[in-house]
Amino acid sequence: MTTVEQDTIHQYLDGRDLLRASLTERGHLLHELEKLARAPQTTSSAANIIKFPLVRAQALLFELSLIGEHVDTLISEINSYAERCGQPPIQVMDAKKDVRTSSN
Image (cartoon, rainbow, N blue to C red; front, side, top):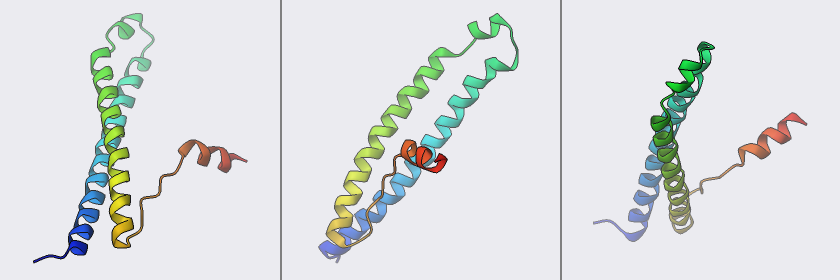
């Protein structure tokens, strides 16, 4: 028999695991999109631009947007569980701000 607090901690930990998996998947999709974007640049033929897999790139962008929404929802839920069970919340950092402040 589990208590409400134990259940909340399990939900928190499961959420963190799911977030980690989602971010890993996001990384794979970004890598694949980067490979697609760089492939036509290896040669300077106009035919290569025509061969660019636009449909696949659009599908990757769509998947990335879905994962982004999923990550946002997970962070919100994880932080809700964190507050209830006294665990550390997920910290969200603005990558653009970090880049700007580190270049100063």
